[in-house]
Image (cartoon, rainbow, N blue to C red):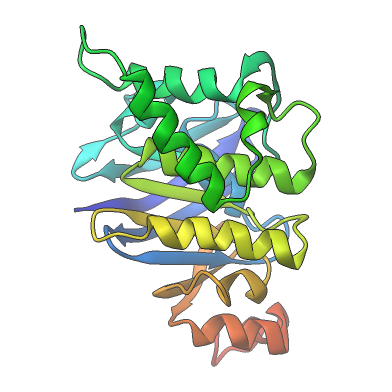
Length: 250
């Protein structure tokens, strides 16, 4: 069982090609990291998988445990088990954190079943404590007035509560200081499981010091141009992306 991406091509609405044949397999139980320079297509890949309407898929496929996802709406993909933590989490004014997460969980239950409120809040508080989120945040509107670090921790709280099959983290480390980075990584590591796969998108080695990947892939110009073990991230940190231009390494 895996999130399988095969020869994926995608363009912007204006026809600009961003993804130019991406192939990647993320089995359950593994953490795969994608690194690459700005404009290489990393965030586009995450948004195409999630169903963002700014992109048009022009070729290839993505399957989730054998099910083709492109016929599914964004909501249906989420319910099927895909979770995307955004680089820039959106604010949802007027909707409290507790009600937002509860509604998402309720939507995943069979018709006629309801969430047990006592069990829900008990579980929510355990996760909030692990992420060092003040319990008063349950009553605050989703991400409204939150700092960058608070928004990122709130994204991981949603991940921990929804327990998806596959989690995509799009530059979750962006804007985090070292303490917030450690807390976010702790939450992600607590979710690692043989029943869950991760795709971690980042520019920097520092995140991968705390979330140890099984495989690292380098993306450039809309394609995966190199794959390897965790040591590949250290090579990139040491030499930058220019070393990939050498014929023997590209």
